[in-house]
Amino acid sequence: MYALVDCNNFFVSCERTLDPALENKPVVVLSNNDGCVVSRSKEAKALGIPMAAPAFKYKALFKEHDVKSFSAKFELYNFKSQEVMNIAKSYVTDHEIYSIDELFLDLNGFKYVNIEEYCLEIRNKIQEEVHIPVSIGLAPTKMLCKVANRIVKEYPERFNGVYALDTQEKIEKALKWLDIADVWGIGRKLCVKMNDNGVYKAWDLLQKPEIWIKKVMGIHGIRMINELKGIRQLELEAASPKKSIAVTRSFMEMLTEKEEVRERVETFGMYCSERLRKQNTCCKMITVFVQTNRFRKDLPEYKKAITQVLPNPTNSSILIGRVVNELFELIYKQGFHYKKAGVIVNDFVPESERLISLFEEDTQNQHLPVMRAMDAMNKKFGKDKVRLGSMSGENTFGRAKLSPEYETFLKNNTLPEANFRFH
Image (cartoon, rainbow, N blue to C red):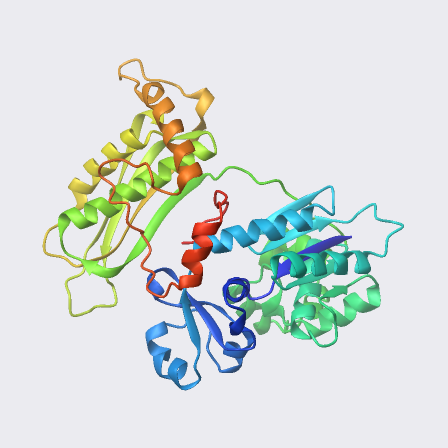
């Protein structure tokens, strides 16, 4: 059996650990630059606030129902996530961290243990020590774990946070209840095609001929129906290094000054290089882009991207910063209101396997000790405490709704390095 541990309304639950008075009140967490709703309490959902709702459109509703809205607190969410993961994985020998608020646990071999009671113990331990409510779905496959977890969240009053799909009767009943749109891996376009062919519930998909499923969904579809039948196709996976790293941001306000945009873009390049060093890789390709606000039809529109292949792979903040600056000069145009920019690095090679051009000076090895020292100091003393001169050190996220409790949290905790991207 597998277990899926999923944090309930994770960002909102993290906010409530800072201020318990938020319990049972409508709460939403806003995205980068306080733009859209990215997490909602059940009370906020009941008011009809949809996910990804633009915050400015719901100001009146927020005021009418006293909905508490907060800027995203990325450091807090990462901190709480790692606390939850550390407790959950301590109960098993194998696990897979699927996202910031989800992980799979391998319970195979627990033959003489009541696994529902065992998972209830995990849930209670997380609630007691981290104060984050979680739902746990148990099933023989990862896809069925997703189904079981959805049932727990849909009917919290019937289940004490844990539910097991451990018999064929339970699996059949669950699949007849589950809408095809809610099946893990079924996107919006595929859902329309399914409905056009009479597939409205997950159970309907299992009644289709295998040749039809393979034609519509390929080999992925065959694996999907086997997983839904309880035949394991997806094993737990270890975390693998990223094949591409992107740091992109929408600015809180449109920028018109060249040096302001340049500073942001160079800072994004620095963050890319830090992530490269974290996974001990170097990049061979760098892309820089800038764009205006596509929703402002009253302003001239401009967007441009440019890519450069490096003669020698690198993860040096200094070298990447130079290239980013050169590319920025080539694409920047005066007279526009810039809303978004970003840096993307890809085509990675392991740091220990770099092939060096005979015709180019290799300064990567000269910079590496300095970069490692800078990373170590920032890990110890806080993000961007040691940085390059071109970086302002200001937050790349616009967060206007931070609370005094959060400032206290930051002062009183040594934060682990983030394992997740929040953009």
